[in-house]
Image (cartoon, rainbow, N blue to C red; front, top):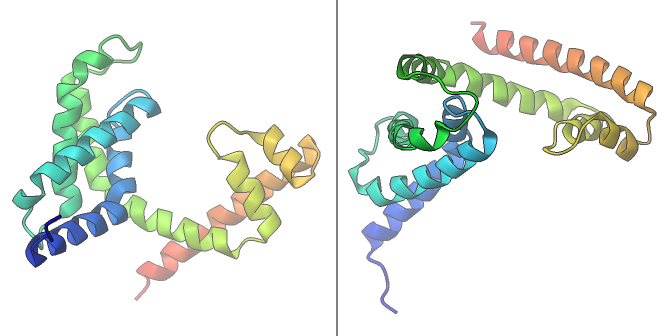
Length: 180
């Protein structure tokens, strides 16, 4: 087995670091353009393969997310026939507008996501577990109530209280970051 040249190894490390750091953003972008989460997940995999194949074309120092989202955009366009059978189908002008809006909002959404992560970490462990279980794919309030040992009514009340607390915390966090 031959040892990879140092340049190729460094390129792979950069690719892995960029993909790990930005995969959520790329997925979010794709999900704004397709009707079902499962389709977005499939397209993320396809996009990731193309990113790996074309990574030598990426210019270090340029915007990796914009470059990757452009690849995702072309993957979505080439997959449009697959989505034609879907009940929800947007014409190309609407798809273009949504893609442009998603790109423009990406930095703000990243800031909100980071603030939410900080605020979630500040919650009491029992409350954090309730919220995370509630929004776990395939779960809902009944499962969150069961896992937390709360009644349904108590779980709904706690979730409302926690959501308000998280909203206030994220709002405060973002205001603090933008203040001089």
